Length: 419
Ligand SMILES: NC(=O)c1ccc[n+]([C@@H]2O[C@H](COP(=O)([O-])OP(=O)(O)OC[C@H]3O[C@@H](n4cnc5c(N)ncnc54)[C@H](O)[C@@H]3O)[C@@H](O)[C@H]2O)c1
Image 1 (spheres, helix red, strand yellow):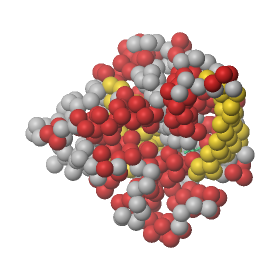
Image 2 (cartoon, protein in one colour):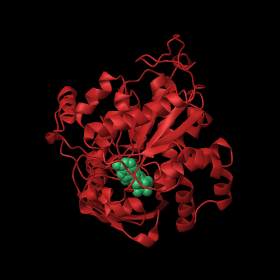
Image 3 (spheres, protein in one colour):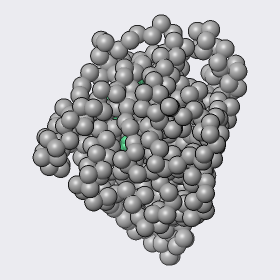
Image 4 (cartoon, protein in one colour):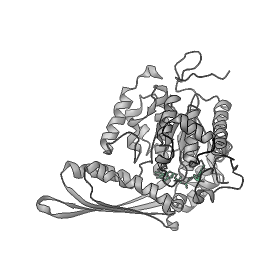
């Protein structure tokens, strides 16, 4: 018999939820670089074939937190490109010269199984740069509301088919152009009416969030896309007692900003300018080459330094698509600062990271922590997840170390009896 769950997440027989029950990780953009590397990495970790390097939740401080073991996780998702996970991982291995091809052979049948749980996503309200990625087989939904119903049905079927206690929906799809919140009703009732009446055409990220939250799923936005940040969706999350958090994973150059800027502040050194140039050549970079899409990412990367310092030095963030770099992102940052007696000094750093392999462990961490938050009865935004994001919802403090401390405090506060 499949257990049924009430809105507080308790099974009908009133047993507290347990980390031994299967749960679902539903990825939007399920065959992209971050998603494919997250799935591939998770399958390797399950076999103990690799050490958990890069996973925050593998640190000793997290071992008594009652986090879900990765072998209890079913993966599914939405995608718009016709590809296969195995082909994506093979191409990733070839292009970026990372990990062993033996691992791909070892995991091929499990990757195929995951692939079979990936459903067509939606391009309703998508920009031309996204629409042109989409397979001709992606259903062209007749309205945004129809898209929401279809996406919801996919998630509900996934949950039912595998008897999942809970599903965490994670957006790792391509970055969308900016969203103007003023164009959307601020309360859910009006937004629902406008969506159902065909009066709005929001981007896909809004539709995915509406589908996920309406199904009572947790929703994590790893992208800078703003479609899930509308205030009507915050209300929708409240109505369904759901958790949500975002946005934009903090994996490389911006992570460095959130580590270094607090140092300048603590030593009372005045940052005069902070210039960061980023070059990379993966599909994310190709989409970000479109100026509208790039604007969303630049905004997400640019606010941190001023927020942390408390004043606004000159900042420059550039992102350039250089195809031959593949997933290897190089960021060169030049920080011009003033020391004692007005002496000008410079710090430069070069960060060279394989972007999706920086992101993948954090996706798994966010999944496990969000699932744990569900069992702990957390509702609404999850400020303790701030260290994972460039623009954390509801958190003004962008100092990485105080964010990390808040995460550790939350983990330490978890009691074994709450799941
Ligand atoms: N280090 C990192 O890689 C990093 C860090 C922070 C944020 N991000 C963000 O994570 C996201 C994913 O990055 P990536 O490198 O995997 O990009 P990617 O281009 O490799 O993958 C994105 C996937 O989303 C799919 N997609 C696009 N629109 C869709 C839609 N409407 N429905 C379903 N699928 C859709 C694309 O087909 C593609 O497979 C991007 O928004 C990126 O900015 C990545």
